[in-house]
Image 1 (cartoon, one colour):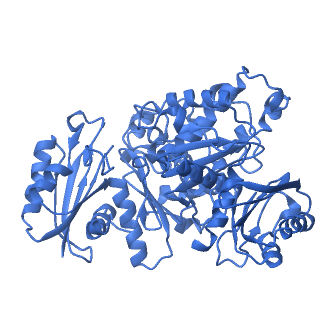
Image 2: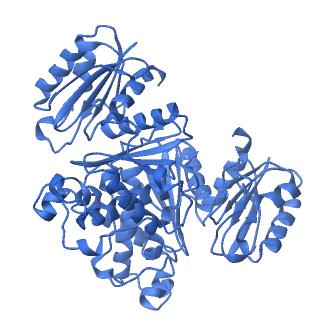
Length: 291
Length: 291
């Protein structure tokens, strides 16, 4: 069986075809330009595989995921003006005529990590996936189902206790200034220090400040969802930075509730090379008719 | 059919017997003293009703709710020293020999509000219930099921952005100082102003500060769970205070995601006279054998 994956990101689209073992057989990527061109390239890639059984599309948001909404399948009020109110699923569905699952990029990543945890025979019932990159977002799987309410989560936009050495920084979120995304997204390095993230030394104090905030995001999840596992992906993350997050988390939690060994509880993605979303998409495409 | 409800609070136990319409038929309450005396009184109350079909116990926590844990049914590491590691369910189960459901006080309240929303024919799939009182806690119902992970939620212990006029206040949570509970629980009035909450004028600026924090709790839920409805109960809440919370919520959210009309989205309990937990208990007792 051939399964399709679309990861629609703000800067690039990654399209892949895999088999029912979730192995990638074919893959391509191209820049995210205007919707018409980008969607056309997506369709052309998958049209090479007439045996494709199903497809899952994981996109930057915000998205309309309510099936009874006339705008189901749309990217809605995104800051990317050209993509506002764009029907993403509709034209692809029309061209390929196969079942399509539609969700957020972080939901697909969370699902990919969850599926992998099951394949590894870990005892994981619930899992949160954060991406800390150009933006910050999170998705969750609870008892095998993607968490979804009146809309998809926007976990990057909660407020946090400010670090005492960071009180002057306004934050960069256009909506909330100093929400989680506004304090720890990749571009905050440039905003705080005037140099891009990759050039910031690993022993710079800014990493302690960042860890203080990411640890608070993990505390929120720990107190609200009580998940088995919290995974951190995205370009800002590294095992070294995650160690700082673990230390701050331990101090902030202050043993208030029991959590698993922090080296396992707070971890980098199981799926390597940013593959969580692709794997999650394959698994979601495989299950698309179960809904 | 007769159903039983125990609300085990830090200061008092409320025991009730109701019918399958969730109407209270008999009720008693007594102070929470030592476990042996308090549990004995609880058992004696229900022994008057030999036809009792099932019972639900909603208690202050933390609780062990994992059925495969040898300490299932216990109150665990509570600050109330006499109650530490107390088997609450065991002796009641032994004496009454009926099915018993066991959960937190706020979970039962959340469930009571959820069930009532269904009876009122509201379109509610998911709901969060916060109590802002002597302590602060929260529970959630998602698609009709109580949210539960590796333990029950402890929603009162997340961190928040401090109000600019409240930076000097240390917070009163013995574990986290200025977490949500440490900033808005009832005793913070005394700690901030030297006078108890009921004596604080309704136009005092402290209410704006409190509203700023409670609104951030609502933002957390909105961004993580995307519930249909967030209910605020507990002694600190009033419709007047909740209006301040709604105003702060609207400013902090800044239209980032769509939420229902705030007068409905953020609301006081549907069940009057602190009856949410009792009603929730009746409904949980009624369903205890469905698990």
